[in-house]
Length: 637
Image 1 (cartoon, rainbow, N blue to C red):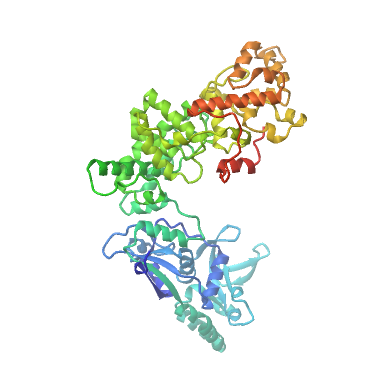
Image 2: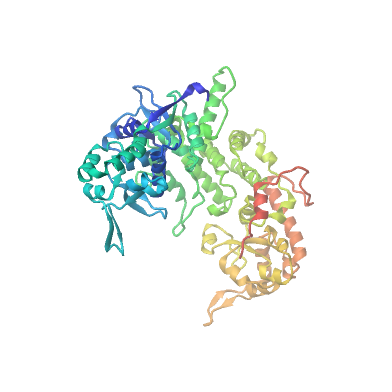
């Protein structure tokens, strides 16, 4: 940003506060609400009373006679009429400070604030005159607050320690109300009438303290009205170091509101319960289930999918019409979200919502049932956009098969961790072309699994770890006890989760190192009751128990006996080497199951996976997932 786009001027504090009161200065709607604790307010007031600097403010000038580019709202606590005024400037940085000073020093009402322990209270603020003019007293010790009734009490509120409930009592105790610091004449007259002998004391206080408020100058950096939305948002986040960074949804909410559209209502619903977020979270949920696979779709995810469709449409139009110059890129970056026109959002929002619902159905077909089991939350963005682009055209069996291959390549290539906006755009452009017979997408080409990763996959935070278990269920894994495949009903009824095959207790008693047994090779999806039956016994023992079945004390059949061949079929559906398991041969089991899992991954990705473990190439960076696997505690049974 060049220096010509802003200027810096000192402005008197009283002028700034009265601009807030009149509505000439307001807040962009993306600013969060004012919330400062009383001790911070007192410290701020102490600094001003000493004429110490409290930092610069930053404002954005409004264009004369034009509606603001952002929705706006008045500074908290200002009169109702302030919000009916078109502001001359928007306060980008300094809201907490300026609102605190306004409420404590100019507004003639009690201040609703919080204690350091986050308890909401109502307070009036005062300066102890005697302490304020004593050079041996820290100024912050001279600033204090009192409850709404202006009485400080002790002994469980039975005794009044300090009563300032009338001006006469304020005069008597020499406690000056801070909401009079810009207009003290009336209070001063009352004080002189009651305590004429203390004129010199008050004069010293007035000259050394009160005049500092009246003459206080604040440096104000004013951005030009020509500053772009993106620049305003970027500058706001750079200076807003004390608060949580705003996401693009919050910023677009303010931009669209200025154009008369309530983006937040679309997402949350006017009642906070019926918007797109609710529809996505509850999509496909059966009775009793609390979370669907779309439970963590964020508003910015939806906006990114919309941005993909919008930017691709612009690019396609540029190419089709033969316009000069490079075609605009397909993007899903934060910048592209801030540039997203309201018209484009309205055009694509319903298609994208449908795209996310189609994506959820696809995930269920791949046996990803819960959001906790979703390998990559980020992969939903291009997946939903692809389904939104194709609509019913995506339902062709051949296309779905290719989409599934792309999905698994992204997972086992571990390609959707970290910064992935560039991959979003490439996949959204390349996958539909591939579905119609074009070249393989970059993600499919790069989605090759490294065999030695299996031994390091120990945490369910890893995408590949989750992917293997979804893949096992997709390929027909059956419950050890019942022989039922893990469809939606069985998965939730049996409370299926990831558990050890050679139990943790058995492995520890066998003296195995945790890295040998606590990895994905020795884990598989099992129902809760099946896992309870397994317990900590050797495989040969718990397989006997499962085969024998279980009877109630009254002779009723709980689990019927299972023929050996049937049980072997159930075990084999988990890519388990049955003979090795029955023989409690841990080493042989791990070697053969490793090979079987690699075959499953190769089939899903369409890439052969070498069974030869190899170290990373020199200089190769470990993926985020690999670092997490090595740093975090493993999942426990």
